[in-house]
Image 1 (tube, rainbow, N blue to C red):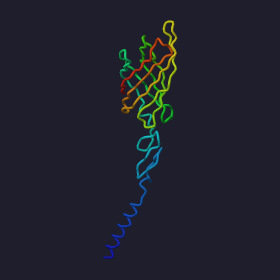
Image 2 (tube, rainbow, N blue to C red; image 1 turned 180 degrees about the vertical axis):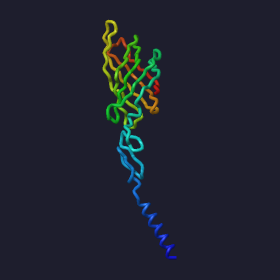
Image 3 (tube, helix red, strand yellow; image 1 turned 90 degrees about the vertical axis):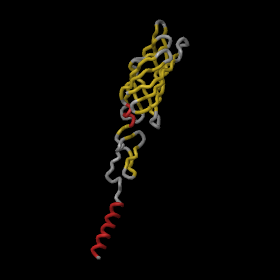
Image 4 (cartoon, helix red, strand yellow; image 1 turned 30 degrees about the vertical axis):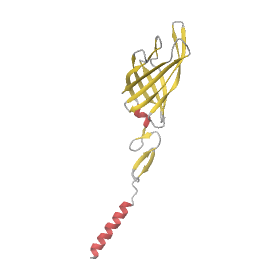
Length: 178
C-alpha cells in the first residue's frame, strides 16, 4: 500500500511539475513576444519566429493589363522592399504607357509606395515627371494606390496628371499577378 501511495504521489508531483513549465521557455521570437508557446509578431514582422519582414512577401515581378480607357497596355512591375523598412516598397515599371491623346512612355520609372498599417494595400508617392512631345513640354506627376489580393496578386490604380489642359488626367487600373 505504501508503495502505491509513493507512486501516486510521484505521479502527482511529476504532473504538477510539468504543468508549471513555461511553454515559452524554448521559443525564440526574434521580433515579437511569446504567448502560450507561440510567437506574436511585432508590427511589420511575420513567420513562425517573427523572422521575416512582412513587406518582403510582396517582392517579385507582377504582370498584367492596365486599362486606361483608350485600350489596354500590359505592364510589368518589379516590386522590392526598401532596405530594412517594414512598410516601404520600390516599384520599377516596365512597359508603362499612358495614352493622353498621344502615347507617352513612362517605361523604367521607379515609384515608391508605403504599405498601410493593415498590410492590405499601399499608396504610391507622387512622382514628378517631365515629358517632351513635339513642341510641348508636359510637367506632370504619377501617383496611385494598390490592394494586395494575396502575396501573388495586386489590384493597381495609376494616375497620370499634367499641368497642361490639352492633356487630360488618365487613370489606369488592372490586376497584376506574379
